[in-house]
Amino acid sequence: MKKVNTEDIVQVVQNFKIYISGLCRRYYIVGGTHEDLFEEGMIGLLEACKSYNGESLFEARFAPFAKLCIKRQIFDAIRLSNTGKNKALNESVSFAKLDYEGEERSLLETLSDPNFSNDPLDTILDREIIDEKLKICENELSDFEKQVLKHYLSGEKQSEIAKNLNREVKAIDNSIQRIKAKLNK
Image (tube, rainbow, N blue to C red; front, top):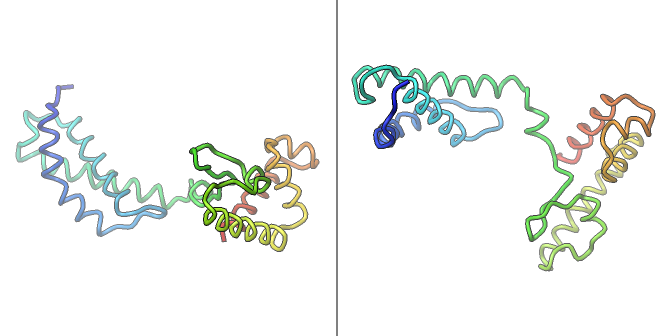
């Protein structure tokens, strides 16, 4: 594989930015934005630069090759987003929250700490969100889902929850996904 000059790649990226941006406006990616498609296009362009066998990236033959690589990368990203393979990850609701120092705290820690934030407005807003989530938990969750949530928030792994509740791990996983979906509404 030949060595590609960094300055040439920078120039090629500048030359193709408008093309990639225009191409991305025509398409939609599930769970993504225009910028996500643009990044995919840039990845395709960089792959084209790496794999091009010609003498120079400024040859007339490079542009059609690069456009093909860009389109394939974008289409692959769209196709993968449409499979729904990562749907659970994309639509999940975190049971944790970052505190003012950037440390992750569980929902249980947040619920039990009334002085979670130093800012009174944040405290009021956090309390409203927590109250709303608790109301959803009380009204929307089944008794089994409430049991699973209690164990989950106490830090147990799905396999431990399954053992404690005498259920299959898949049933616990499904229950957690339902809980997250209900809390995400």
